[in-house]
Image: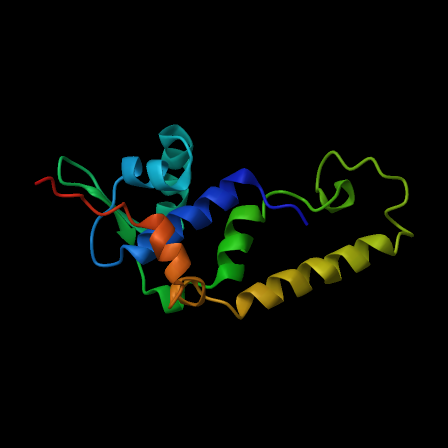
Length: 150
């Protein structure tokens, strides 16, 4: 299975917000620490907010934060919400399916079972599982400490 760039960025955003739980974060902060553009982030943040994963606050003192506890954000659910529109293969598409083998193909069923196993495994993980006690992740996503000059 291939994960889209949008989903990859979405998880960076969710993990960044999780590491910085308890405060609003900005697109600029995320872009800098997660190596992505603010224009890509704007689209992803908007979609995550529509899906109820993020709370956004506009204005000068605005930003984003998680809309629910990390333990309630299932990794599999996020994948399903973001990847559901993209068919796994042509034969899964409702329109533009030109495959002549659809009626007899066993590969389609096998691929559907594999995708469900993929999502099922991810359903057992939450955002909290990705972040909790992950010091290496926190070190990457937190800004470097200020160095005071003498």
